[in-house]
Length: 201
Image 1 (tube, rainbow, N blue to C red):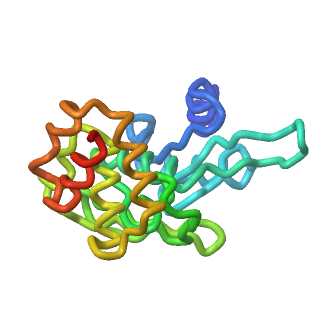
Image 2 (image 1 turned 45 degrees about the vertical axis):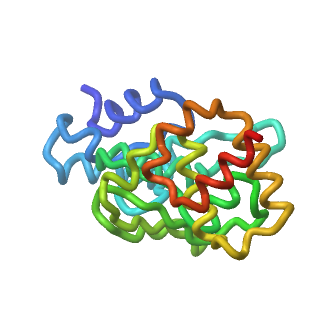
C-alpha cells in the first residue's frame, strides 16, 4: 500500500513543478493531523518546500544553470493563498507601482488589499506579505490595469506625479479601449479619471 505522503506527492506532481499547495487542499485524504504530518515528511525529504505557514511548493528545479531549487514569486504565493481562502486580492503601494513599470523598487514586504481576512504572512529571507481587508466594492474592478492604476496613482498622490510617470500612464491607458475602462469609472477618483480621459485625446 502507498503511504499517505506518496499518494499526496503523486497527486501534486501531476499538477507540475511550481505548483503551490496547502494541507487544506488534501483534507479529504485523511484526518488533518495525518495530512499535516505527511506534508512535514515531504518537506523533510525535500520533495516539497515550505514557503509560508500552511503553504508549500512542489519546486521547479533549474538543471541548466545549476541554480537548483527555484522559489515561487511573492505574486505566485499571494495568489495561491487567495485561492485557498477564496478571496480576491489586489497589490497596492510600491508593488502596484512596480507592476505597472512606474517604479523599479521591489518592496521586501508586499501589501495586498483583500476581501478576505487580514493577516501577515512571513516568507523566507525576511520577505513578507500583508493582506489588508477592504470592502468588496473596492475590488469590483472589471479591468486589471484600471485597478492597478487606481491604487498605484493613489500611492504617488495627485500633486506628486511627474511628467515621466504621466507619460508612462498615458501609454498604458492607450492600450485599453476607452469603453472597457469606463466601466470602472465609478471606482476611480475624479483626478485619476481625468488623467485617463486626457490619455485618449
